[in-house]
Image 1 (cartoon, helix red, strand yellow):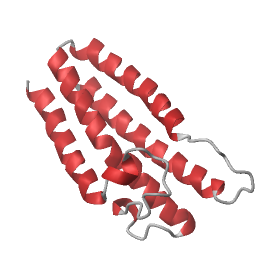
Image 2 (tube, rainbow, N blue to C red; image 1 turned 45 degrees about the vertical axis):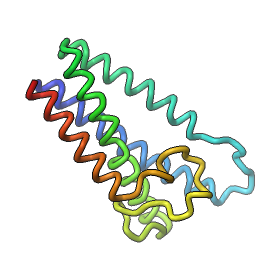
Image 3 (cartoon, rainbow, N blue to C red; image 1 turned 90 degrees about the vertical axis):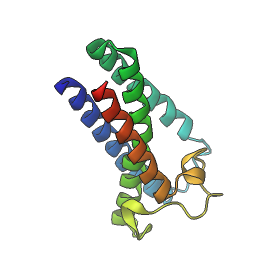
Image 4 (cartoon, one colour; image 1 turned 90 degrees about the horizontal axis):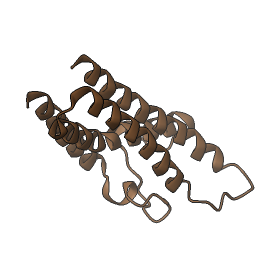
Length: 144
């Protein structure tokens, strides 16, 4: 059980680092004269999918009860936006003063974001709801 908790905490730390990285990337991308002309979100999704697969494999090797692995996996997916997006908005506020609500802010102009999901369906309230659902799923996995 301790290994599973450590894996969950490492996943949270990974998502926080991802939000931090993207805050710096998009901050500096705004100051370059060369347009990226690339939607980096598909690369981010692929990268996170690889990392997530490794976490699920580690969970599966440790737990060996597929329903618990599924519940923890769904829980990790649900809690990820809270930590990733929260850190992104917090760091963008620290770097360049935008997003005054910091962790609980959200993109106001959904037409400028190239993210397919987060800017359109993940308000701060929605991220909190996803976090609660994710925690419930993870706790349920440990109870089973």
